[in-house]
Image: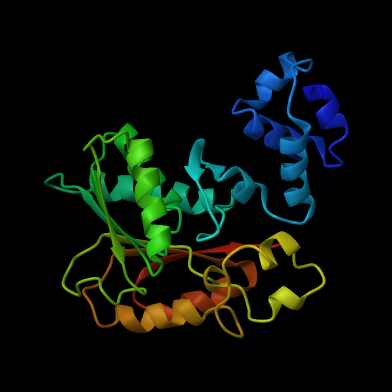
Length: 272
């Protein structure tokens, strides 16, 4: 079977079929355009197409996804990075630059990320700040040891082993194992913020409900359970100058009320 025939007969949207065929052939989508007459094992393609038709996310099928122009390894131990989270990262980079430029004696910007997952937030911040000539000392935590292992693998691959920035990875449930006296300039988090029961809504995507880890999605009746617990834990530690938190659009006002006396940016994100 040729590549063109495989794409035509996939039964999938062509953008999805191209991603999967490129993955099967270990090549790029642009290569497919010029090699439509090349051969592909139909059994391999059919297996990938069947997984997608069953609802499995493409990121899990490929074992990778794109975020902020970089490719991150991704597996079912982690939430799949969303383009909307790039807004959170952009603001974190801007704030980190402002913090660094305001220092009398330049020092690395100290950043804490909670719930790192694939590591896409912490790693992107580190790499983008490096391009700006800004050193960073980042602590990225997650309660899942599998997620942390994946994040470390992504960091080693994307940083190419260079010591220009520092990221430490720590197994911790929120601030549980983060030393209380450790100072940070900024806290960044995309914690679970989906309401319990959302998975039963008619519009809830099967590829999210059936495949992505529930522990990375759901957080109580109003979806703010994790953030409320974080607010309580923050009262027991040295103040952090700036908080950047992703939440659903209807949660932003309530979330800001949890964190008084702190500069907070709550990113309301619509799920529709």
